[in-house]
Length: 100
Image (cartoon, rainbow, N blue to C red):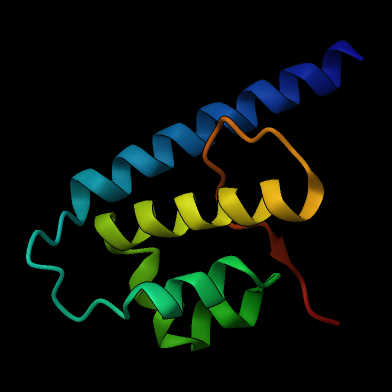
């Protein structure tokens, strides 16, 4: 049980570090080329496939734009709470599902 707890703590720390890094490295104050809230909501509501991260221009932008990534995280957390009845208090990175 302790090992899984440590793993969760490390995952949460990784999420926080990644979120801060995206915001710091890609601030995009003018929201240049942002896909918009509907596109980010669509991304938040789906399972992330590895090829989506490489091929979908919305993903390419969202994971390299501080404001879009923050908006995506908030939307994703809302989707998780709604769909699973979870109390999500820590922002999450997209979970990557490998394609067959």
